[in-house]
Amino acid sequence: MCVAEDLPLRVLLERANRVLPAVKQPEMYATFAGPYSRTNGELEYCIAGHPPILHYQAQTKKVQSYRMEQFPLGLEPKCQYASATTNCGPDDVFMLLSDGILEATDAARSEFGLERVRSLLEQHGRKPLQEIVANLMKELESFGPRNDNQTILLVRMLRR
Image (cartoon, rainbow, N blue to C red; front, side, top):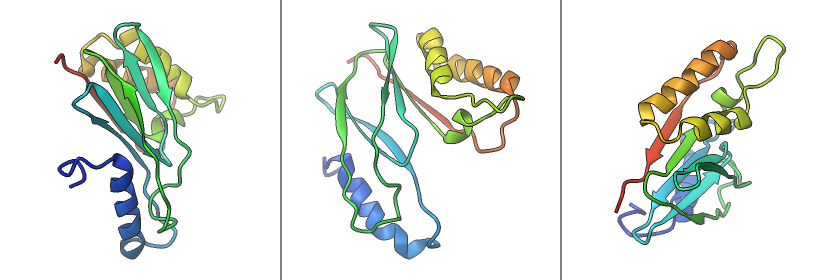
């Protein structure tokens, strides 16, 4: 509904945050990371209690990390949220992933971590999205056991 009304993502979060306390257990909360492509070539994003969004820039072949220190949804009903924008170009890739990927541990109890994901995205960012995921999952499988959920969302910007 917020997109249909062309409202900022922060409004979506604030509305969801007001509703969640009434429909969940007190100890529960939700995290959020969302990109929204604006018509002017900008991408608006908002992150609440979620790992950073990674942005593979096709032109430079570098990865930016977007973080926002904001409360997860459903903890504080009157919480206000912020969003930010970034420029994006054709063939840029945005990666959203759950903490289960970042927190996978090896035999020495070292975490897989954001830097390892960032490096993989820099290496494989030009490839088809399925190959990016396959390469990441292959690295995870050889790294060690994973005990939490593993969710990956990739978005490639199309040419205008």
